[in-house]
Amino acid sequence: MLPFRLVYSEEYDLHLGDHVFPSKKYKWLHDRLIHTRFAAPEDFVAPEPATDQDILLVHGSEWVAKLRSGTLTYQDILRLEIPYSRQVVEAFWLAAGGTTLAARHALEHGVGFNVGGGFHHAFPDHGEGFCAINDIAVAVRRLQKDGAIRRAMVVDCDVHQGNGTAAIFAEDLSVFTLSIHQFNNYPSEKPPSSLDINLADGVGDAEYLNRLGNGYRAAMAMFKPELVLYVAGADPFLEDQLGGLSLTFDGLMERDRLVIWTALTHDVPVAIVLAGGYAQNVEDTITIHANTAAIAKEVLKKLRP
Ligand SMILES: [Zn+2]
Image (cartoon, rainbow, N blue to C red; front, side):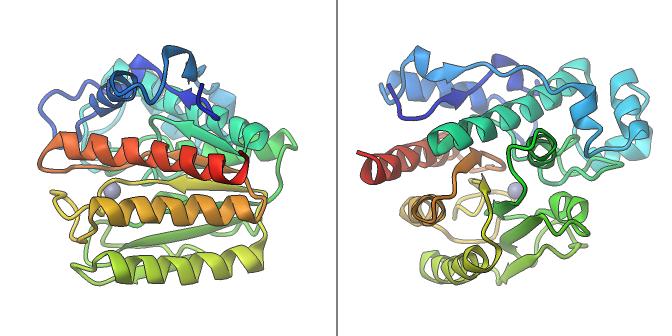
């Protein structure tokens, strides 16, 4: 068995049809992990959907009611950039429950892994950029409410800035938000994170890892979180259709190793969520996500043989 659980549900699929966001990737990743014998069926755990009460720890009641009742305006749907359906709503509630469960697993086993989530563009009162509910923020607030943690750090390595997460925790000194992203990319307006690492177009492995390592290690030493939520976006990849950084498969694996190793060697557990990935060839996106799981296993085995 794996040294950590893989939180997954078939209902993570948003059923978007022909859309740049390949939301079938969760199922394809699940299947890949089984077929390569990286994981067995018993390594997977199905999450419960978050309760409305949990969602309301982050989101406004008006936005939650709109999603629940299907009364989004045309403007709401334009910003969200995905069509509305019951399945979409169920999937977001489930992703939030999944990230919360992965965060609980992290506190218990060192690493938790949600084969989904990472919807960092969701704001308290609206969704945007394929994100309706901010699962990362819901998990943090729920664990804080339970008294399981006080201080959390979000390490957002998606190619796009984590604007929703930054806005949610802007006034909250108990949560440190780090975002490393391509500056000349969506979102055009970037509400400040605790630490934003703005990268120029086309930055490759060496500069990326150097900038991330310096910022992250300094933040870790200063802030001393009790939990890291690692947003492991696959879209800094050089063949991503929505990204303009030039990371290789190896560079992305080194990034995973850096984030997970640094946290665990500081005795800080890590909850991993997946986030974006729009590679020309969807198999590449699956490979990047599968590699993140493999690195988590490698690091855990090295530190806790
Ligand atoms: Zn992204």
